[in-house]
Length: 406
Image 1 (tube, helix red, strand yellow):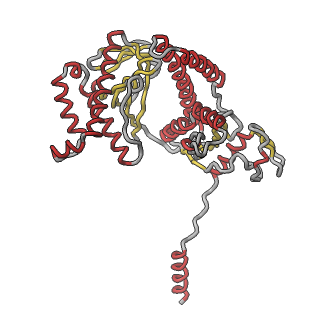
Image 2 (cartoon, helix red, strand yellow):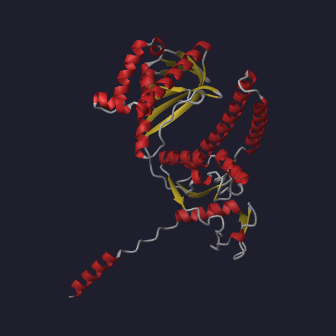
Image 3 (cartoon, helix red, strand yellow):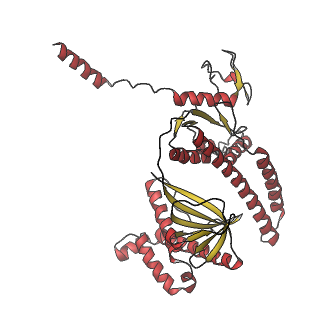
């Protein structure tokens, strides 16, 4: 089985290399936006003139002419610009397939990245902590070596975020997947306890670190609001807020990676609730005619769900379980938090508080999140009911039996 993996590392470029990388990101963003404008505003004129639709091939040919005319575009690696055109072509395919919105323009400060083909980039390890990657027209750039990079290199993405420049190596690996017959576990995702398991344990989410970062982010945001627009002080304050939010995202991502990897190593079956997180985090503001209710409370709940990363947890777990030979089973979330896992009594009054569940029917008491996780496990491992035969099939069976009797 072939799987794709990405390995991300922190770059340590010199000032000259930073300038070249910024130029690459700027030109690739310009090429993408020009190509999007051409497809959006000039597709009819192009079709009348050529009798064809605008495509990647036609825009790649025009890119060659553009590079011949402007030196500052020619200074950037051509394949990076071609990758930007491929990204736009894929965005249009996703839009017409109904799986994505209409493509939007790339913005400065948000889309600061460019991509090479794998055959253009080489890397080597310098010592225990550092490696060296060689990029076309940029040179050799040092990066923090935190793990090996196995597999065949397919492409390499260099990007800038509030924490600095990073490189991501996308590889293709051939692995042998053996179906695992390990134990099953139920997983309940929550807000107070981000992840609860059916065996009574809870994931060690770094709550204190996240709260500290949230507090520092709020303080930095208040300082940003006091700055005058366009001032240098505002730029520094804005960068500080962005860096703190990026650190929170990194903490969340690290937790989800570590916890899902542990699940994939330990269990053969993981049962999850089939949650529609997009609907759960929708705003409650409503309209002017019909304003929403409990808007502030709903906004706080949405923020908590997104900060924990329920969807990211599911996404990471899916590909890691597949590579480990395990299985994810999605079950309905209905009544999992109100049903007693011991006797099956469904009564919402049994949940005395966020953390306490006491069944009035059988008298069992346990953590409410653990009870929900056990219900999820029971629903995921319950044998499927045999489907009743259709009417036509039953009639055919009766006719066959009558024919045999005759």
